[in-house]
Amino acid sequence: MTYRKVSKKTLADWRARAAAKRAAILKRVAEYKNPDHVLTVAEWSALNSVSEPTGKRILNSDHGPALTQLSAKRIGITIQANREWHQSRARGRE
Image (cartoon, rainbow, N blue to C red; front, side, top):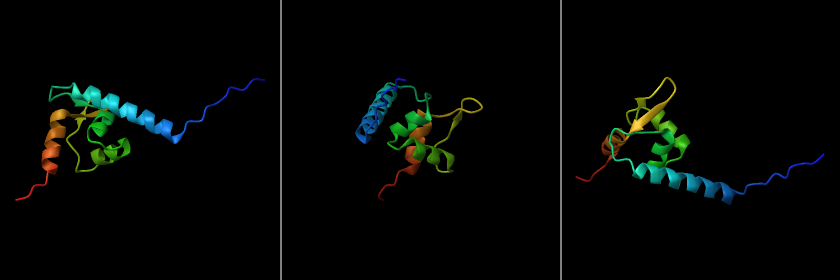
């Protein structure tokens, strides 16, 4: 019987893969010009520099941006809703 060699991924491998995924998402999001374009949760999380679990926690709370229901199980966030959410969260000195 021959066993297949299983390579062990190091922490550096996982981090490099995550960084590459985030860079690809940010590159794709930078091309979106329409304010009505709907971002996925992964795209929205990368755009706002938070992890996906943190992004999901924000979206599930009452303090997140307005959600767009795409289907029975799929949600998204429009670029305009993200922009309005950022403006509502801004703290300025007066």
